Image (cartoon, rainbow, N blue to C red):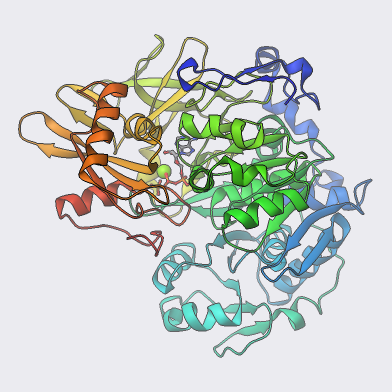
Length: 596
Ligand code: ATP
Ligand code: MG
């Protein structure tokens, strides 16, 4: 790959780039200059605003302004169904379909500000419903389709959802039994064939397909609520983060800078819109940037993913560590048997990305993965490894232009101080004021207020900043291990274990110990063909001690077939810990069902 000099030894901790040699030229070529020049007020000029000065609406920026301009006939969304069916929606198709949906809502008497939930697999109607909801100035809340009845009822209850868009099958299996727990839910719009019975049911094919394809978006304020997103529930009960229409400027700019979207890109974000990544980057950012997005209905399967990358000539790929680690289990050779020559930029989010995985990208695709960091609460990417900058494998990268990050030390009570020295651990914080910052946790004002000290938003993650301004994830504040006076981040231990050729995944926790506070305990899942044995356990202990030193290396290592994960793919360390200690397991609404 031109411009990237592969330093494949993890210990060298750097993948060098020559940005001028990269093709196409990275959008963010001169990081320092852009950072000092950047101003969110100027960034608004990249967008249109509603015609006639009627404010700002996400759906206008994502769809309508392209549908009435040069991109009208360009494919906005290329949908690939589970059975191989395909459907292309151009920007003008998407405009018409979303107009119909907005008109259908209005026809039901649903008014701006009311909540519309979407519960379905990655079908084209999901995308139309979310964008149509925004057009109607209602609030869109996409739910992951694998949720069971209780998590669905809780989330619809929190947001007092008035409308739900789902399929007859999902309605029968997951909604019918809890319908009486959702008194606010008046209308259910059913996508596709199939039978379902209940009050207020409507067929999409009648209600939406029969609605007018003309719609003018009404006046929308940048501070009007647009999206309600529930967090992944990795650390506890999920929170409903409120986002506003004005967030669109951050979706746009971060897609341009951190994912390096260029107008001819074929972009594939593998996340489901039930999680914030699947909405901010699976729907909104690629559309505002006018690119073509791939939507794959099928769930993860390495061969299907490789053939999708190959067949669709994907150029920019945004995925997650769990998927990357699953691909790694099969070895780089599996990737090499596909023609992935169109791919030019690969990025990852959601969990710490082990240095091993970043470097594996070079081996398998000739491209490193660019890790980036953000949260449901931040609405968009905040810290990223950038196309034009060197990558330090294991680091989350640098704050984007317009984002001020810091590492804070907590003093007494609610006082904090900024840590200026490099490589000191503290809480990662962001200065308020970027447009996609959440405006609240719905109905949980106290929880929201606790996230701020003065102008700082506290992320709940611990990190360090190095002398070059790169941020390094240490662990979630809740997961950090205190052992014999050391603070140990599970990520560091997990990454060291991952370097061993037998290890596919590792989850590390602190286990209470009367003498040293906590001992480090690791749970390890092995690669195919490797069996647990005492010999291997000893080998892993030895490997970890060599890599980490005896104070940080795990004292106990257990083998397991799979690690418990959230449905958004994150290792649930709190659950490993609760199970180890025989404590209550807490909120499991987002637990993936196939863990053992
Ligand atoms: P909850 O807040 O309900 O416990 P969650 O924090 O997992 O769930 P999300 O908003 O989906 O919900 O995830 C954001 C969190 O994911 C971050 O705070 C961080 O802990 C982790 N994360 C995301 N990206 C990265 C990354 N690149 N490196 C390390 N951690 C990351
Ligand atoms: Mg969180």
